Every structure is written in C-alpha cells, then in structure tokens.
Image 1 (cartoon, one colour):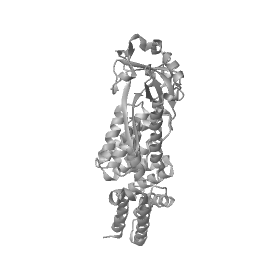
Image 2: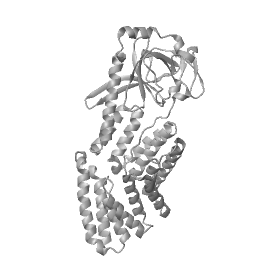
Image 3: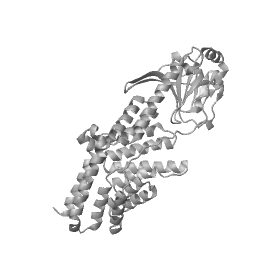
Image 4: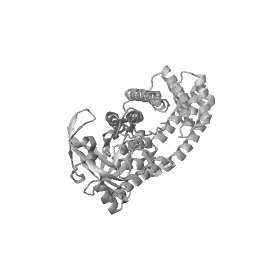
Length: 429
C-alpha cells in the first residue's frame, strides 16, 4: 500500500469515527464526542506528517491535511491555510474546494463558501457541493422576493444532491431544511412542510443523519409550528442529548414548556380576570360583534360562500368545525419568547375559556383584553403532553390567518397579515 493510500485510509477512518460516534459509543458518551474526535485528529495529523515526504502529489497531501483539521465543528485557520494551498496547486481538486467552502462556512464567510461550492461544481457535479450550495443559498440576504428565489434554488440544488445518491441521509436532511425554508419564505404552502417532513423521514433511515442534532432540532421546529407539541419536545430533547454543548435545543424545549404551562394556567384561571369584571365583559357580548358573520354566511379564503351558525365553545368538536362561528371576549394575551404564534385566551357567554393561537399576524396587530373576537369555522385541537414529569391537557383553537378574524364587529384587513419567519439551523456536515 502506498503512503497516499495509507493516509487516505486514516483520514476516512477519522471521519467514520466522527459520523458514527453515537451509533458506536452510545448517546451517553455524546458529550465526549468532540474531545475524542480531536484526539484521533491529532493522531491522523501525525500519520500525515510521517508520510509527507513519500507523497508526490502535494495538492492531495494538503487537501488531506486540511480535511483532517476541518473535522471539528469549529473553524480552523490551519485547515484554511492547508486547503488554500491545495486548490492553488490543483484548481480542479473538487474535494479541496468542498472542504475549503465548509471551512469558510464555519468562519461565517458565506460568499466565499458559495464561490468554493460553485467552483467545485464547474469542475465536477457532486452531491457535497450541491447540498452545501443549498445551505449557502438560504443564508444570503436580500429583499423578500430575492430571498424566495434563493430558497427555491436551494430546494433544486438539494434535490439534485439527493438524486445523485438517494441513500445519503445528509442530503435528505438538507433537502428537508430547504423545503422548510421554502414553507416560510413563500406564504406557507402546506405542501412544502409535508415535503420537508418526508425528507426528514428519509434522512432518519441513514445512521449518520439520524445522529445529527440538526435533524431533530429542525424537525422539532416544524412540529412546534404544527402544534404537535409532544414530538416537538421530544425532538428538542434528542438534539440536546446528541450535542449537549449546543444551547439552542435546551432553550427551545424550556421555552415551549413555559409556553404550555402559561397557556394551561391562564386558561384555567380565565386570564385571572376578577369574577365581577368577567361577568361585565361577557354581558357586553352582542350579535353585532359577529360583524360580517352575523348574516349567517361568510366568504371563505377560497372565495366560496359558506353558511354559518353561532355555536358555544362546549359544542366544538376536534378538527375543523364547518359552518360554525364562535364569539368570545379576550381575557388575556400570553407572552412568548417568539412572535409566532400570537396567543390569547377568550371566554364565551357560558364562561368557558379557550386559548387561541394566531399565525402569520403582523407585529403589533394582535387583540387586547376586552376585545370581542369572532372566528369562523374554528379549528379545535386537543393538546395532550406528558414530557419530563410535566403534563398538559387542554383544548386549543388554531387560526392560520388573522384576516378571518372579526374584532369588535370589524374584519381584520390584509395589513394585519405577515408571513411567519422561523430560523432553520444549518450546521455544516
């Protein structure tokens, strides 16, 4: 075996050790992963130094050296130096361009990373450049229409990466992230979120992607948006176990538990409004508060005329309540760590209190205590969560667009609507 073959094998062994660490050592050792990978990295660098003089192709040598130094999640200036030498010596060395691009990505130099991946693709079409370019495209700024274009291109690049190797879970993960970004960039077409979930399910079949905290974190964000709280909490928890040094999953998990706790408490306490004031508020409810819905019909978002009859909160069934409209008084708004969703509680004339989550609402366009709110064809769900000794069991109403709301007899205008923005985390693979 030649010196080049020996060191190539050592570098491959290092990456296999990193990518299959949890699979081979167990989740309980996840906290030691970076330390253990760092140890093996030093051994691999020693092997490279030993064989340096026997390797004639210096471009490949510097690429392998840079790749070894690039194995850790943090940026390495030494890796940048070695990889820069490699591409200068051989501008057609695709793997060196990909590694240099990932190194720039870690450094936060997004345009430089993009140049590396597009440059690599000019020499040879490959899944790593394609999927990394997909990630980079989503990080480039611009106005909303430019961003939407870049996200659409990002989806196409990730699709191409998947087509080159449908067994590669990392490409599926990046496709899932691209679809999720598309969902939030172009007005929440549910199809994009479904495609995102399908891509994540494919990613999970690959042990390398399955143990990537990114998969569990980003999918948990999608689950949270769907109000599938048990799966969201489980995902944040798993991401945190896989990378205990990454604070975001723990923070998101804690914020979501606090949110659920506040919703439960304020719903049970009817917004902590004093009984006498609550009675006065309820007595203030009148049929004119239904506004355009008081005539018994409304025009649905699809432009259809729908018959409506007012119903009590107690009569609501799970899922969509077709041909029904509910009316209540706002008793509280619920503060959250994020602007999405806008959440408030309201009571009907039987004093039954329900929380309402409103998505895609413009900042500062919410409702306030004492407002009368009518919701046509309300979507009711039963929230049941049992997570880390905390239990929640309540009913909740979800409103996907504020423009269906009637507040104090007046329909919310289109100016009240704004697309929800959610961050997709992208760690370099």
